[in-house]
Every structure is written in structure tokens, then in C-alpha cells.
Length: 390
Ligand code: USQ
Image 1: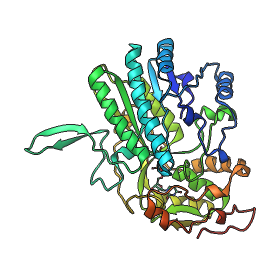
Image 2 (image 1 turned 30 degrees about the vertical axis):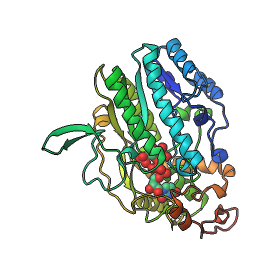
Image 3 (image 1 turned 90 degrees about the vertical axis):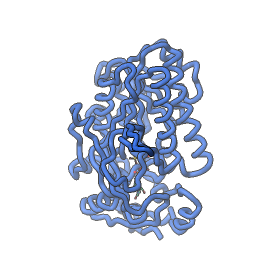
Image 4 (image 1 turned 120 degrees about the vertical axis):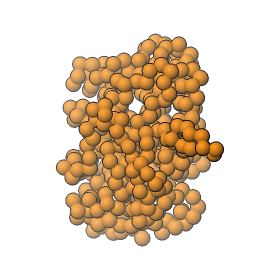
């Protein structure tokens, strides 16, 4: 989620209630309420951010009223349950993820129509809509040329191939965006973002109160931040399976920059949904683990994979659109890893080592294969000698 809206035109951030107060508070910086952070931003920038607490998936009338009152040029829609592992943890997680994410996307489109304002919707989607099998070529930005039976050619939304319920909701969102653009002429941008790493943007560095959270646990933490945290704690790096998955990565500062570019370059009225691949580069999980191991001296440990995913995949992704609009992507850089490590060390006392091993399993077979993982076996270095997971 992004908070620095003061530097943008008229832009409105929407938070779903549960996203805002969401779980895994064991080692986060969520010690400052959003209102405190709005005040901090006012102090460092002189600019106002107004905060309204409503549930986008439920409080429809309030949402319409808010749009009519604020008359934003753009709405940046972050109000979705954002964690693939959380979405696969239980039926409760699956149902909540679908109900919140799909209802929220639909509500936002309806609310923009009911507001009778020409509001540009910018949605945070995911690279995961394309799937992580081996694509056999470069993944284009949203649309792909196909030859249909009979030799007819077409340019269509890239086929959806989600790997979790969370990723499936982003695919369902994409169909809603396509429909409402076609039917009501809504102007929509969908950002297919890769895995975010890092903790700070140039803006959050201005005041500690502007930093929101750092998730390290198996449900909410993303892979590189988790490895950096584990390296700093002296805990063996939790590589799932062979670590053969190749993913797209982006630094948190570039996430903010991409949003700014997307807001400033809306599709014209009548144009189809704009889609950007929001990544800096691709990398294989075990190679990232090796980078962190080299940096910290902490070894990578290959665990049974809790996820239903290919052992190995190649990933070649176009990100030309953002680069052509001025993005100079930050790539994986040990120098920037230090910043994360310093933050982790500063808040080390908040870490609960029992949260480090994976706690969400994609299906019964994966759960059975992970049955010997013991959360109590993880011990932070310096406190006691590090034991390893079974
Ligand atoms: N992995 C490990 N060890 C860990 C954690 C993860 O080996 O301790 C592996 C996973 O098996 C997976 C890869 O690392 O192959 C990425 O996992 P992740 O948890 O960093 O990212 P993912 O579940 O794919 O989803 C996250 C966010 C989601 C965002 C997505 C971008 O939860 O919001 O959309 O990254 S993407 O994956 O490109 O779709």
C-alpha cells in the first residue's frame, strides 16, 4: 500500500477495513496509526492527506458519497487482501479473499459510474495473473497476439493461469476491468506487479512514523525480505522446494514511482484497459537465497515446498512500457540489502521466531509433506545457538 498521495494531483487512497488493520503484527512497524502518519506527512511536506476509514467491499453508499465529495482525478485501488499464502491458509481465507477482492473491484467500478465523474482507476494487480509455468517466450504487457482456429488472428487479454486464490482474484478483477471499460467507458490501468522488496522510499526516510510495516512471517512476508530478515537473525534461509521458481522483483521505491507514472499517463476515454508489467527484473529464488547467504554467512535450507507450484520455471517479462515512460528500475543490489538488514536489526526484539516457518499449505498433500516442520525449532542467533528445522 502506498501512502504518499500528497505529491500527486488529486488522488484518493482507499483502504479496505481488513487490509488496514490486517494481521501478522508481530514484527511490523504498524505502531503508528494512519492518522499519526498523515500528521507526520503534513509536518515533513506541508501537504494534507485526508483519511477516511470505510470498507470498499461493503460500504458502497459511503464510497459513492466519498467520490462525489472528493471528485478525484484518479483512484489508486490497493484495498485488496494481498497475500497468496493467507489466501490459501483455510477456507475462511479463501472465501474472505474472493469476497473482499472481487466485491471491492466491482464496487469501485459501480461507484465511479454512479458518481458520474470521469475518474481514472489505477489497480494494483500482479504478475501472477500470467502464471508461473514456463511461458516459452517473453510475457507481453497484458495482451497477446493469438491465432484462433481457422487462422483468424486476434489480440486478447493474456490467458489467466493463477497459482493461488489471491492470484485468481486478480484474474477475476481483470475481467471486470475489461467489462466496465467496454460497457461504461471507464478509464482503467491495471499494474501487474512483481514481488516487492525493501522497506523505505525517499519519502518514508523523512520520518520514521511514515514507515508502515515489514512482514517477515510465512503468510505475509515476501521472499527476499524474508531471506534478508532471516540472514540478519542468523536463521537458516527458508528456501521452498528446489528454489527453482523464477519471479519478477521490484523495489518499494519503484512501486511508488510506477504508480506516479501510471497516474500521470491515464488511458484516453474509450481506450481499452491499460496494462503495465511492474517489475525491474526476474530472478530465481535459490539464486536470491545464495546472494543473501553470501552477504550474511547464513546458509540456505531447502524445505519441503508448502505450495503447489512448478519445481522450476523460466520467466521472461517485458517491462518496456514503464521504462519508455521514464522508469530507471532499481535492480537487486547488495548495497540496498543493507538498509533492510539495518531495519531488521533495529526491530529484532519484535520478532517471533515461531512465525518464520511456512504456516500455509496449498493442499493436503503439501501439508503432509511439511508435517515435520516445527515452528519451535527456529531460534534466533545471539539468543541461543541456532537450531534448524526438521
Ligand atoms: N518462497 C520461498 N521461501 C520463502 C517464501 C517464498 O522459497 O520463505 C518462494 C515461493 O515458493 C515462491 C516465491 O518464493 O515460489 C515467491 O513467493 P512470495 O511469497 O515472495 O510471493 P508470492 O506468493 O508470489 O506473492 C507475493 C505477494 C503478492 C504479489 C506477488 C507478486 O503476496 O501480493 O502479487 O508477490 S507475484 O508473485 O509476482 O505475482
